[in-house]
Length: 121
Image (cartoon, rainbow, N blue to C red):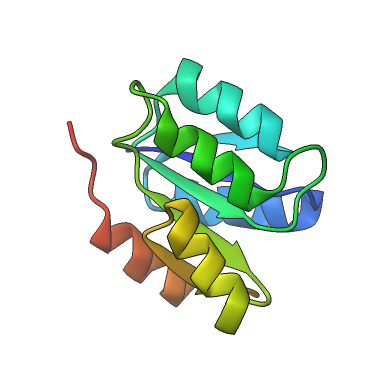
């Protein structure tokens, strides 16, 4: 399974990539929402982990754009945020995210998430 990790903080991005790789997945990375939209189209990941508070293009708008494109509309997007409650979570779901995972993400939560989204191919 290929997972696109969209996170602007390098340490958090590296941690998420390490967890994903330990599960035997291929990890791609984006540092902002615009890069995420572009990589989703070119890399065609099986799952996108999308931080919401991003530079250039925030996670909500990046998710909307990914969901709006025919070639990427089928890719599940999971929002990841330290504020994954209330309005932030509701906005993420309305933008097209399937769920919202609370930061800091631990190995058990990521393991459970990856079990819920097996590779489509």
